[in-house]
Amino acid sequence: MEVNVNCAQDCINGCLLGDKCPNQQYLAEASQFINDTSLDKMLELAEEARLKKLSQPPKWVIPDFPE
Image 1 (tube, rainbow, N blue to C red):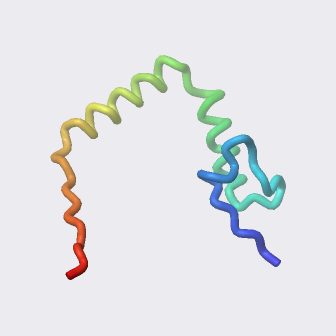
Image 2: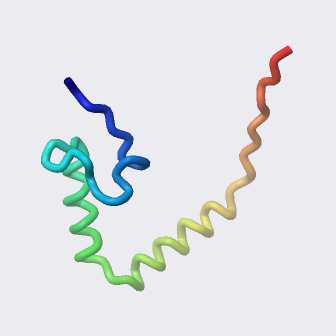
């Protein structure tokens, strides 16, 4: 029996699946990024992303109302 886990919600305090986690490769990539990147560079990347998002036009979502 396969257990479906929503990592974004269920694994907030740590991975529930351990070695069976399908996202192990991302853990290694994230750890490598954190080890290799200075905090100043991370803040610079975050600021660039924030400014990029601010420069985009707003995205309007028109709900479908039942008739």
